[in-house]
Image 1 (cartoon, helix red, strand yellow):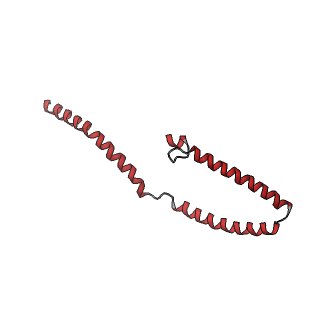
Image 2 (cartoon, helix red, strand yellow; image 1 turned 30 degrees about the vertical axis):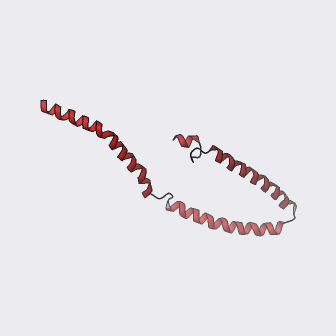
Image 3 (cartoon, one colour; image 1 turned 180 degrees about the vertical axis):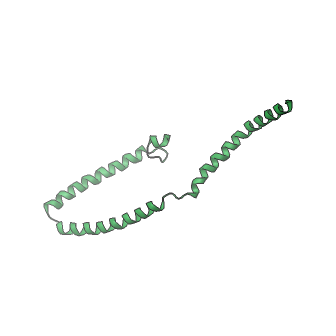
Length: 112
């Protein structure tokens, strides 16, 4: 019985000494395991490709529509709104860049 207590005390001491190494190996393994998974799923990649194709077709159709409408009141109103929207978009992107913390979108994402 005395021998068993000696074995338990040695095992506990060894485990406590090895614990930092076990944690370090586990964390390193988890950190680098992300390299084996794709950044985007196949479904996302396919949906993005389809969206890009459809967007290009929409752009061509929009250009044709703009060419026909040049000089009209509606086209001038559209240009004013487009300029205002472009300015607002630039402002939004500036604020997004200012809000980034260590390349995270915002403080909430950084903390999680």
